[in-house]
Length: 457
Ligand code: AMP
Image (cartoon, rainbow, N blue to C red; front, side, top):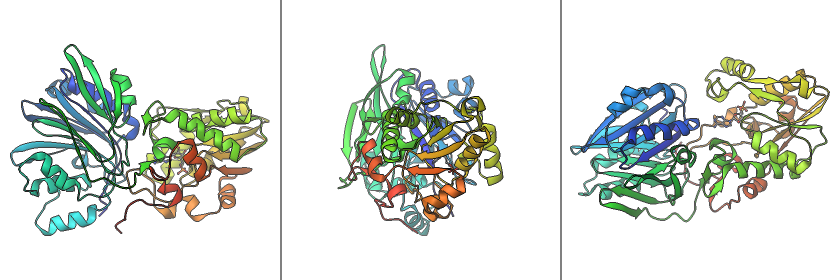
């Protein structure tokens, strides 16, 4: 059985009169991190009230639902699940009652030793409701004999390997956790209110911008940040010698207006484009991004190369990401309805098309066909990331190695497949430089094959 969840966004707010509505807004800002289910849990007089729905945040919550989610503290989650796994039982926050106490967990990331923990628990009689890796944490918490919740949490978390940025709510505390390697982002903020401020926590700082909160700092890898009526407290998980912050957050996944791992994502993407122009120059008339994911990199490429930038391809925003469509016949349809090339801009010109990354190569092939069909005389593809050669096991949805075009083909074969006049990828060194990352602090396994943890088969 496939047992994972991926590509999620988490949010939490402590002690604010509009907690559920602010959580709704926070999730709305994090919608790009997951569109298949959403959920909010509120804490009201030591009890939890929850609502979970399939689909988008704006569709899943109504005024009356938000009114029902009473209480000064809320946490929320948006989730993208792989095909077949999109059940409401897997929607988060996961909720349960442990030793007469309500608990809710919102998780971003992927725990890589789920299989063995799950088997061990099942051998001892555990019954699982869904298929998400997060449920193992609930079971570990339920079985631990520690008298304090924090002790049980630490005892459980040290058994997990892999990626977890968590927002947890029990009957009296909001707890934010980042795994010791810090795979996924998690930031702390403060929202002003009449009598002081409320602590907020979110996967990305763009959620703070929307609700008008101040970004305070990132949670440190291995940090457990606890908010209760008594104030705040920190605990630490055993230190990991290596950090593994996900470089793909900067390449594609995070919103460009977020600050992730201490660096503005928009700046990173422009830098990726600048370095790409240095590493893979080409004689051309126009730099054209694949919207929206390639826009910032294309601006950087244009600035560095001196080749003018123009929006030669227009995107229809009302179509879901093509990547999410599960079947290949729907995917190819998706590209056509989503992107429209403008021949008035492209005709008779040598075009450099910039995208953030190539996964299967299907999208690039369609785009190059569209651009050529609009009268471009040459189409050069430049990719603002290295070839994607490995799947991610830590919370980004990449298909299996067999579907990754760069894992199975040379660059010349990829060029032929996408039918470009030339192709160029950024180097791994260029990627690290653009993001101002070191190999000791980032995971780039999807590009360099260096997986920072052991993996279960
Ligand atoms: P493909 O046709 O499979 O090569 O799709 C490549 C496109 O998918 C690129 O333009 C990326 O912007 C986008 N992409 C890359 N990784 C992901 C991901 N994990 N989730 C959604 N979209 C992605």
